[in-house]
Length: 449
Image (cartoon, rainbow, N blue to C red; front, side, top):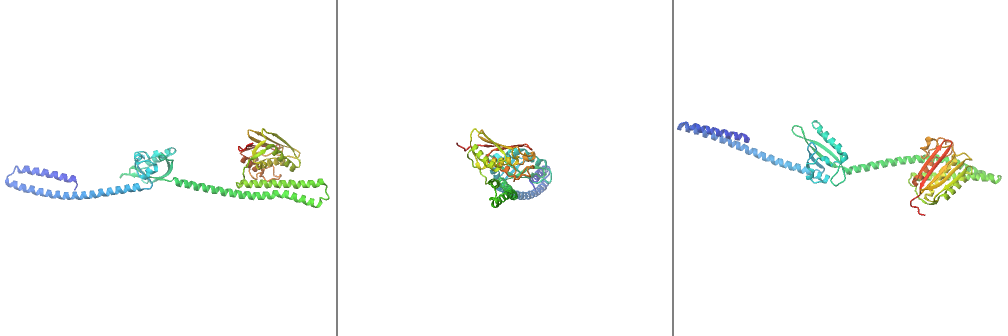
């Protein structure tokens, strides 16, 4: 029996007693006595029912008290669990306005709970991701009535108060009433910034390893090609040296001085050719292994170029005319002598190699605006347009130079040496009309005269 039933029964009893009282006023003594007895009997029965109702109410009160205590205990337990969750836990309405937040949430966003409650959770998302976040929230609301709506997960950047943004993993589940209507959302946010950094480091390490392996394979292929080409290129000058030395050994006493000098020059030229090949191979190897260094020292540009041209003219045996021009505001420059020798030797050797015998090869050096400008010009076979874009790649040779000896390393070495100086190289060429190379190298800022 509940309180409403008890009140109704008491009201009915009052009405019954009032009715009996009115009847007693209209009857004689004997009838009154019988009426009183009847009233007392009904009162007694009513009291019995009231007693039963009272006991029933007491029992219900006890059960209600136990239920309340259990509810309080469950609420306290829920609150303890809510606070003890290591991740940030939010309860919001369907629009994302925060109603509850645990301690981990305040720690994550570096803000007190009083400032969290009543605020949209979206305000802590960084600006460039806010639109995408709102679209996801709208999707949750629009699909709330779907029976198989499950937990949604994604990642987002949030900005804690007075801190740099962090990456968090988001999990969202729906809160529904008994009718299945969406009334709120539960959010679990976990800081994954460290794992993201670790993942990025692992990806970087993996990429670096792949690049290292690719570089190793490239270097292995380079060594294989280098060995093959070097073996071929060394064979000709070595054969020349061996042949001339053998002829001198057996016939020099029969030959004139001029004929002996011819074979000696052949030996010298072959030795210089081998030396140049070895220098190219060594420089290429140093560049591939990262051991190629840039060591600028003070140089007299004009003297340096003249001495180098004398060496090259001797190896050419005066088969070409060489026109040298210098126009320098200052003959002093701070450049790497070893690298500069490689640049000029390869460029000028190509001029001699690809130009007809008897033609003129031009070479000039000028300075302007703290830069040295070197230019070589020949009237040789020229470079096909399709080859110009590849001439600085190792082992690449012009399609019209297959019958001329060479390893295809010279121009790649020139480009490496120019890059180490922080300079530039330009090429102009036409088939059958010759080629012009222009190299500009800045003076080192560390140079003091």
